[in-house]
Length: 412
Ligand code: PLP
Image (cartoon, rainbow, N blue to C red):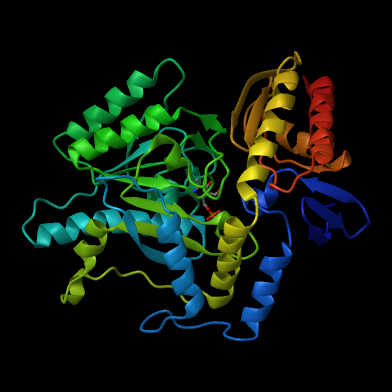
């Protein structure tokens, strides 16, 4: 039976049958501050009675303007780097990524119209990546069981090896070679510091910095997909900050509204914007959607930005990350587990089992096991990961780790 959730508050889901679950993955990594944060709920209610929806073409509204300015202020920045000074709204992480790809190829297309070199269409990606489930996003993600049926719809990409610890140079050499190839790529897209659905695989900020530098040297546009890593997940507001880099294009979603309602944004620098700014209608950036910058969603994002400004979110993140680190080091000693890893408030560990494939029934059995112990977790194959809301208490964290130890005893 699929559990019916009647209501939620903070880190807790209240089921219709009276049971309570700790939401250990923030309902697919979105409810950063916990469920039903009162300020976000109030902002949504207020906006719903004022201006619910507006065509976002030729018209604008205050919540969208405030969010756009807020995103520009908060975006990673560095001296001598073109800042992310332009914002394009959409409504999901996948769409924010599609928009990023369209901006990158559109830039080279329009530059070619101006006689500034050939158009470029090749996209470079990092092995094991996940960027969403729309056609473009699937094309740039790891190929496998989740997208095999649609392979005829997907475009070819250049895949750079994942920076496995100790073999990072292979990644950098591969990227260098791909950028220097006769067909210069349009862009390289990465999940900064940690690959999510591809297995919660971490790599160091120095590698991220070196990858961005290679792209800059070859004038290949660097796209950061901060859909999962944004909004404090990796310990800083955006993961790129830890490498001191400013991407040319950055996709954000999930926690932009504190996870209460769909909204996404793609930020771009002046060069991308200018390539599409023209009196020529053929060069405009063509992407529209009914709900672009929906006012209710933008009002939730305005409340989220206020929470980041006025509450001690960074303190909560530091406390949670520290609490996870302490407990992970104990869990790592359990003989059933291997390969513990953590990036801010994201932690993962692999269950040692021959039953490890994505198609085995291990993950559903683990899911049911955790649910019986009052916990929502959703392992990826034999990888068990946590991505809890920042309001999680130490007691709730203890409860999560007690369930992880029990899973090790039972399944290891
Ligand atoms: N990019 C990354 C890195 C993600 O983790 C996800 C979703 O988990 C997406 C894109 C797609 O976001 P959405 O599910 O909102 O379409």
